[in-house]
Length: 141
Image (tube, rainbow, N blue to C red; front, top):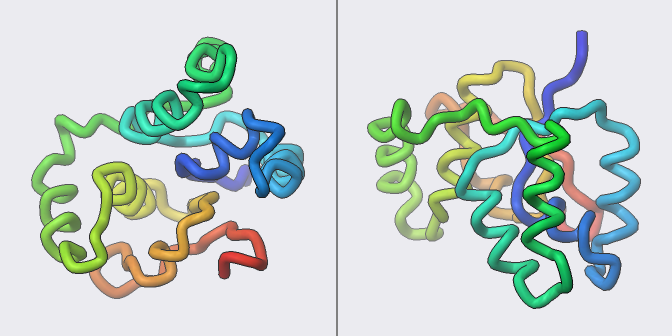
C-alpha cells in the first residue's frame, strides 16, 4: 500500500527555493515519496505568498498543481465545523488555518503522515488524542 503524505507549507517552500536552509532535506524527502502529495488550498496560498519574491515562485507552485504532484482533494467548505473546532482547541499556540486543515486531513486520510518543518505538529493531536505521524528534519523534532 502506498504511503499517503500530507504536505505542509515549509517543505513545499524549501523544495522550490534552493536557498532555503531545508532545501536539501526537502529534496531528499520528495525523492522518497511517491506523488501526489495531499495538501490544501491554505498551504498553496501560504507557499505562493512566501515564494512571491522568488522569480517564478508562485508559478512553480501552480505548476506542481498542474502536473498533479499536489492533490487538493480536501475541501474546506465541507470541513468547516471540524476545522473551526481545531482552531478553537489550539487557540493558545496559535494554530494557522493551514495547520488546522492538515490536522483534519490527517484525521480523514488514515495512515497518512504530515511532511512539515513546524514543531507545533508535535503538540497537535488528531481525533482528540492521537499522535500525528510526522516527517520532520532532525533539527526541528
